Length: 144
Ligand SMILES: CC(C)(COP(=O)(O)OP(=O)(O)OC[C@H]1O[C@@H](n2cnc3c(N)ncnc32)[C@H](O)[C@@H]1OP(=O)(O)O)[C@@H](O)C(=O)NCCC(=O)NCCS
Image 1 (cartoon, helix red, strand yellow):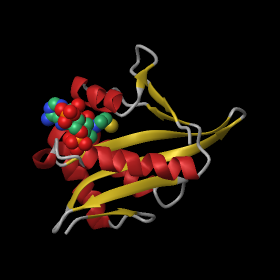
Image 2 (cartoon, helix red, strand yellow):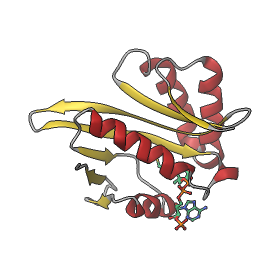
Image 3 (cartoon, helix red, strand yellow):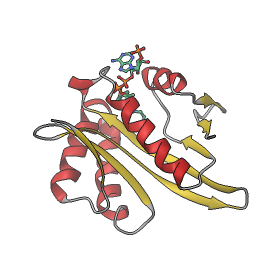
Image 4 (cartoon, helix red, strand yellow):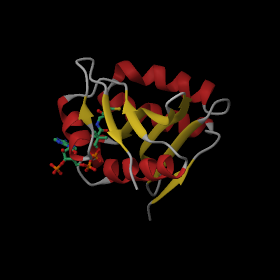
């Protein structure tokens, strides 16, 4: 049985699970994520969805909404899937769930700030995101 759920307050066990998932492919990001989850998720307007496996999470997405003079938009901070389950549709499912939530919350655009690897870039391009500058900022406009 698998399911997707939104997390408001991240229990310590889940912080550790997410740390292990990130550490598989981007060890340099793992400690940053660990602190970010522990510090931010309870205090700020963070959005986190988990794809649950039978015994542990298989992937997660974390981001936030921002209000500016131009309206509301969203940023994706992290999207990681357990390496053993890459290429089985989990990343797409998490991203679509996140996009639907942002659209329902009035966001007009989603940006990605972390520099994607070539593989991740292809994944995002396939999902409608475009590279807008050499620092690898990728953006997608949301429309109904
Ligand atoms: C990028 C990532 C989230 C994609 O998740 P996923 O569940 O594997 O992706 P999906 O199965 O939903 O989508 C598949 C598409 O993603 C890309 N992709 C995913 N895994 C891939 C792999 N091992 N090799 C090549 N392309 C891959 C391909 O474009 C693929 O399309 P295809 O099936 O037509 O070839 C996942 O590979 C991952 O966690 N990567 C490491 C972390 C990362 O770079 N995150 C993004 C930056 S925040």
